[in-house]
Amino acid sequence: MPSSSLAPLDTATPPPPAQRVSSGRETSFWVFQVLFWLGIGLVVFDRVSARRPEAPPPWIPVALLVVSSFVISSLAHRLARLPSLQEWPRPQRWAFIGIVMLIATAGAFTVLGNGLMGWQGETGTRPIVPLVPRLVAACMWCAIYFGLDTINDLREVEMAKMRAEAAAGAATNRALEAVSLAQQHELRQLQAQVNPHFLFNSLNAVAAIKDDPEAVEQVTQDLADYLRFALRDAGTLEPLSRELRALVKYLSVQKRRFGSNLDCRITADTAAPRVLVPPMMIQPLLENALHYGAKTSAMPLRVTVRAHVHDGWLQVAVANSGQWVPPDPARSPNTGIHSLRRRLKLLIDETATVDAEPESDNDGDCVRVVIRLPVTPKGRPAGVLPDPA
Image (cartoon, rainbow, N blue to C red):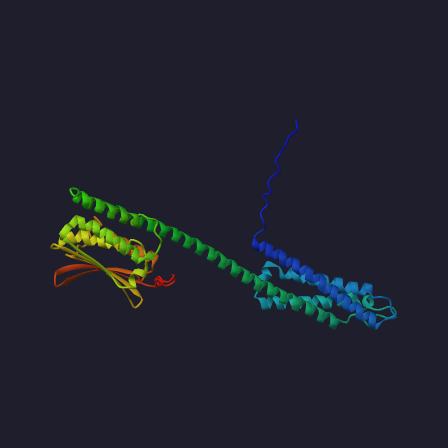
């Protein structure tokens, strides 16, 4: 029976970046080595042939020159790669390698001798390539080698900097994504605190007029209209006019509950309804005004909502007659204001504020809660809709 087998997976892992860079530098060096000394050899061969056209081609002496120079420079490169020498400061390391290179070149010139490097018919008193041109070639090699070494080091530093910036950017993006997800979750939690609280109070209002079928029908319709607004899939920022229209329905429901014991009013200038704000921004403050005002105010309970724009700021004030009730940490009765502060901070910026201001007027004590937020928050789109055509 034929058998089948799965090919083993290729588990080889790519070399680390440092190893790849080192391998690339070695390849570049050997390419430079071959091209440089071949070029020197061709120049020497051409000059010697032109100076001595009657002599045979100087293949052997030029080959000895190229090979000896290649070996000396290769040994200098290996010396430069020694870990102990890598710890030296760059000027000292370069000076040491340059001196070694020049001494080795002079030594090779002496060892090869004039007899070996001489020309046919001569006694070796005139070498093909004198010492000085060889030292010049060695200096050229050192200059090019050290220049390339510096360029490689600068490139590695720049690449390391780019990798560090990329890693920092990736970490920042992950942190921002985590913050964004946390803020989205917090906003959902804050929004969830508003709707059930309002619904319970509204059902109490319906129960208060259960003996009046026409009033029940009207308040049920108003409640349905408001719940349609409150429970819809709202945008992050919406025109204030949407909530102002919905609050009219809300106060209609509350009016059925309080009857003549409630005097309420909503006013806004022409610019305020077009300002973009978080949805359900005023409702929790209005709900607090009705709840605590009914406990501390003489009847009728007076509630006002005023919105206006001045010097690039939207100000919404919700006031009610009665006295300020300090928050009870055990029962957290101030959840509406606290949630609103958090929502404005997350959706607008740190400059948006919600302040409670106990006051006194001609009609007695009152409580005033003021929302202030910039019409055009920094870094966000324009906070005012264009005028209708």
